[in-house]
Image (cartoon, rainbow, N blue to C red; front, side):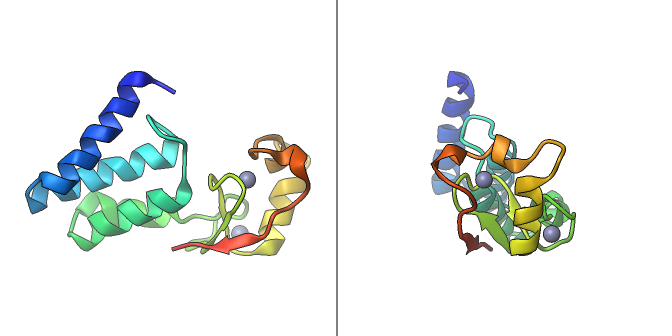
Length: 129
Ligand SMILES: [Zn+2]
Ligand SMILES: [Zn+2]
């Protein structure tokens, strides 16, 4: 993890807590992107969607545009995919069929990327935003 990027995320959080509304919305959107790509934080699709939703609620045009992309199923591309891998929180799916498909697919399967995949097989999907 980049030290500077982690510092940037801490600053963003501080900014959201203190900033005026318009700037806070921009910081929320930036934080959503950090969580989406794992910049300065562990990638977390749940946090990404939460911050993006907040920025969208605040009227940020980029966040409104980004929201469907953040919620896209990592297997079939459907939006909104309302469930996520509970083990790594990095991927989201529309349901168990997509999770299983992604986990076992021939090319670049999720079991090769998922945190602690060696602990066992599929984990229970958790309802996300
Ligand atoms: Zn899907
Ligand atoms: Zn996973």
